[in-house]
Image (tube, rainbow, N blue to C red):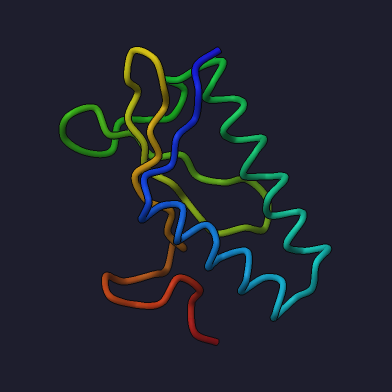
Length: 101
């Protein structure tokens, strides 16, 4: 199984998303989000090319399941899956991680 590595920007986005859920919806929802993120990355560790191509140079996009409207973009390298960005599906460039209400 290949390793999953988040680039610093993606790690910061993941941290911001979990803080948002903890603050706005509580630890239970934060935990469910993290469980779904882990489920998605575990699936991709086993089947790295399961998500469709979404850009140049082998970039792929994985949409999280359930009520979490987030996607992440990644590339498959020989020894790892490198997550480049995590975004809310309604987020526009320059907006904060979580959508405005």
